[in-house]
Image (cartoon, rainbow, N blue to C red; front, side):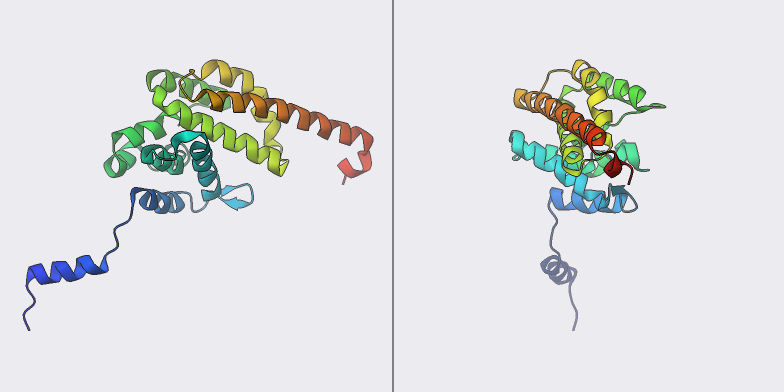
Length: 200
């Protein structure tokens, strides 16, 4: 029996499930970060956290931001580059990811680098804020040592990041700063009051 090209194409098409942009981005992110961890969790957890923050603050219907949330650490933390993202997801998503990808010898230099990019491409600000919110919320939840680092950077971060975003995101970040300061104070007090527990 001779199968025509058209019939063969139809058969292949029927067996092929087309992935959505989000599904493609999720698979790409899992592959790109496969050897990385976020604390004790697979790295994808942090990417979902950033995505969920964007949804909470009104970006849930914008596929570009949700895709960028999954890919936001690809350029900074893996061997993939801007063109790898732009060729698959378009210039806007690639620019969102690039705008939150910092270069430099230390965290301060990387933060300044990102701040300069966000001035030129302020559409990336909500993504940067979502990343910071997700990191601080997880630090509070897990009681990890990165909390003090984020709190020390807070003033510089708020000055450097241009005010181009949902005001509620900035307000929530300020709230997290206060909550984090309180949490660190309680932690320090606990060490003073219970030195045996802190020495274990």
